[in-house]
Length: 207
Image 1 (cartoon, rainbow, N blue to C red):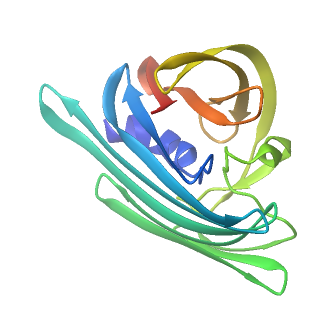
Image 2: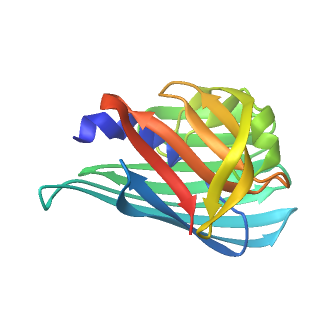
């Protein structure tokens, strides 16, 4: 069970959301609740702090067959990620990612090694409108700088706080399966859909 989800979760949960001071998404797999992704945001657009925590448990016949926990704290300066600390427990496989800006370069260490990323770097910050213009994003679980393609698809509705709301669908294509991210017309992140191996449906909806 873990191998069916681990790669995609590493990508989806790399994001540090930040719609408001405190928010939470309910997360389901094939319409069955598996956990939540909570976050808090503080500071100003020029000096923003974001804390994110996800906790999932997938059950089969009443037994837990997969567990996942991810915590991340980031500091932003305008549109640029300035620092990041993240820890992941992927069904017993643990890892940490640490990033800090030194002389205008984001120095990253993670399970896959070290990187030096000059210029303005973003992670999978679904909450930030500028993310949709990026061609590479930092993965907060693996520490990799993933190449991505992000494009607008169609419009529809998603449940926001239990009520259907108009929304736009944007697709992120990269090293794993495509991820569809939903935004209100005003640009607020309100949902996420992805198909994992075996055709199973992973879904985020704003609580």
